[in-house]
Amino acid sequence: MIFIFNVGFASAAYLSTTFKKATGLSPSQYKTQHLNNRNTLDSV
Image (cartoon, rainbow, N blue to C red):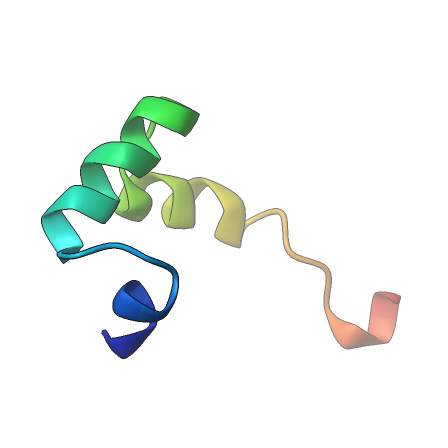
């Protein structure tokens, strides 16, 4: 949670709201969608 402050956000709620405005997805929705698209180290 400390990273939130390191990147300039005052709270997790503000980060989540800003993230959703920028991507159209909540952080958890983004994570769920993109977990399936990750490459394993063997395929790199």
